[in-house]
Amino acid sequence: MSQTLNQQTFGAHAREYITSKPHAKGASLERMVSLAGPQPGWRALDIATGGGHTAYAFAPHVARVWATDITDEMLTIVREQAGKRGLANLRAGYAKAEALPFEDESFDLVTCRIAPHHFDSIPAFLAEAYRVLVKGGTLALVDNVVPAGTVGDFVNGFERLRDPSHLRAWTMDEWRDALVAEGFAIVHEEELSKLMEFSSWAQRHDATMKRLLLGLLAEATPAVRDFLDPGENSTGPTFRLREGLFIARR
Image 1 (cartoon, helix red, strand yellow):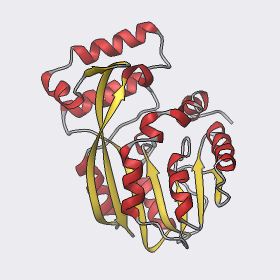
Image 2: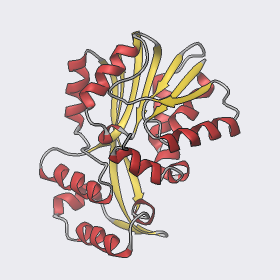
Image 3: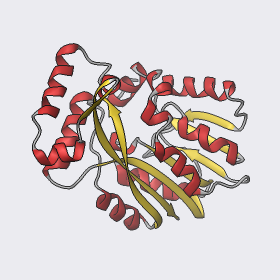
């Protein structure tokens, strides 16, 4: 079976996600756990788990968590990390976000963090999340978000040039409308800023591509620069992205 672009991209860089600061230590991870209010008897599902950080954060608070992904290399890492961290209630397995291999109303909690902008269909993912949740179950969701219009188009294009598996980050309004259309009741939403260190963000590329990406950042319009907020720290160039966090009930 041939690999998809997502499988090729994430398989080749799987180990990077264990130490990636935005994934491992981003502020939205702690907020997700706090706002979702996981309970000891809950059955949880983490969709597109990547390096597994969301599953690791929720595992101590629930009875069982499934960490799913479409990339074998990611799942191997999650199993290794679960053993090292003593998370005996964590299981890892293959699942595509838009076609989950679980029965209806199987989970009390579904989580997904910094992944939907890679999905083939976000509406199909939301429909599956709704289907596998019990009535009254919780969806805890975080993803990169962009403004509407040309600024959002630039940010998506900038991200896609660095990572072709990036399809499209949505606006907060798009997420809100899609959640409600699927039947979810939004109980909390917020937008968070995150600092991106260019050296880490672009590390998979050669010097030529890095110069191109930095050039695009430097020559961006004032509106784009206002959103991305380019700067410097001890690691070199930086910029900012934003995440939308939603807690919703089925």
